[in-house]
Structures are given as structure tokens and as C-alpha cells.
Length: 372
Image (tube, rainbow, N blue to C red; front, side, top):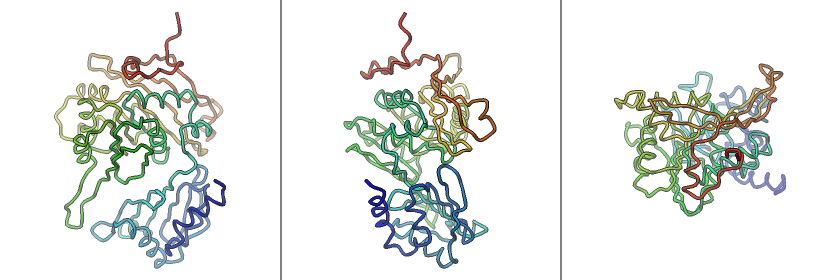
């Protein structure tokens, strides 16, 4: 598709919505990945991984209110004094968060993370330098071998995008149940059910949590469960799902490192109220998570998979983490904002070769022991 055709297709999504006028061009600009509207003062954008002032702003409070109304009308969601913030999505799949002036001191805040349209397969991330071809082959094979994978990283590091691209590797004869706070994942497979959590209404009732949906999904004959993000008690439900034979779970977690991801899972289980000793929690994590994929965004805007880490139960109440691949930054790039470096395949031989054999999946050659 040519750039002009793409522009026309995108324009048709917003041209009939009068409130989008102030930001229409930014939404249609393919180099802009995120919009951050800070009241009527300024609109900041992320372009090529870096934040900058767009040079435009909303004219006045009336125009800002019309934009909010235009965003919310098709979604059926609402904002009021009792619930002054909301998550929703635009017709093109872009994700939106709105916080009203009653909470946002300097004016209503709108954050729009645009749907990624230039990434259609995992090979596109290889081309962008986000990971190597060997790393991509391993992750694609892990989908087929039904390893349980957690995608870890900070906000905007590409976790959900990577999960969505890899989900295309799931065989078409599987039944996928996708559970998200705000639905943004799309699938080409035919047997897919997308479930979306619901917050409580004005009366404080009607909430349906991620954990509720996860429990219900086990009754829906899933062969694959995908969770948009783990934030709380659903961590316990996810581990129980894997323990009852639902391998191949994919989930997203906010953490700055693989060890931080394990720590967050430990905290979530502890805060759930289950009286489980720490050694048992770690044992459950090791049984429920095979691989942690760490995503980062560098200061110069480059997004990368910086670690692919195996989670192992070493016995004697110990959980261990071993990198299979990692990105090693050059000395010159440390602290300078320059993300130069190289991807490295470590000397770790993974423990899940039997899982691959049981499912008839070939382990990538660079993960096999060298011939004696």
C-alpha cells in the first residue's frame, strides 16, 4: 500500500468526527506513535521513540470537551464526577486514556497510543534491530512448543506489540482466549474469543476483573490463554491455570528486569491474601513461567528485546534465572544515550528440550548442545 493510500484509509476513520480536528493530522502521521494532550496548553508526541512538543494545542476547553465526547461516543463508555478517568480504544485500535480536570490539575489529560500498523510479523522487528533472527526463531518456536512466556518491560517498550506479533505463530487449530483491560490485540486465527474487563458503574457495582475473566475462561475450552497484563490477583489464577494443564499462556508484566518480574509476581501472590510461604510461591512461579522476555526503550528511542531469560526450578526451594540471549551495550554507549552494542547468545543450554520433542517442534539449532 502506498503512503497516499494509507493516508486516505486512515483519514476515513476520523473525518466524520468533528472533535478530532485539532489532532487529525497527528493521528494520520505515521511517524507519530503516541499523543499526550495536557489540557489546552500543549500536545506532546512520541516520534521515532522520542518525546517532543508537537507545536500544536487544543484551542479552548470547549474544543477539548468535544474531542473527549467524540472519542467516547462510539465506545459506550462515560466519564463523570464519580469516575473521572477511563480507558478505551479508537476505531483503528489505538488505545486511549482520559483523565478529567477534577483529577488532572492542569486540565483534562488525553493519552493516545496509536495502533502499530508498520509491524505485521516478527521479521519486521528483526529488520528494525529490536532482536536477532535467531531470537525471533526461538520465540516463534516457543509459541508452537507451548512454553509459558511473560513479556516484561516498562511503559511503551513494545511488550504488547511483540506478544501480538508472536501470537500469529499459534497454530490455527487452537482455541485462543484473550483477556485484557482494554482490548487491543487482534488475531488472524479463526477460533478466538476476546474478553474485556469492566470497571464498576456509578453505583459501585458491575465490575468484572481480569481475575474473574481468567477463572471463567477455564470453562471455555481454551487451548491457549493470553493475558494483556498481570497486575494483581490474576497472577494466582494464571499459575493455577498452568498447573491444571493450560500450557502456552502468554502475559504482560510491568518490570524493569527478569528478576524484577519474578519479584512482582511474588508480591502479587503475597498481596492476594493466600497464605503461601515464599519458597512455595517461587516454586509455583518456576512451574508457571518458562521464559521471560525483557523489553526496553533506549534513551535514543530504540526499542529492543534486551534479554530472553529461562526460569528454572533448581530444587531445594530455589528459583533461578538464566539468560539465553541478551543485548550487551558497548562501553562507549553506557550513560551517553547511545544504544550501540550487540546481541549475544549465552552458553546456557535450556532445560525445555523435552517439551519441544513432546510437541514435535524442532529446537532452534543455536540452542542445541554442540555435537561431541
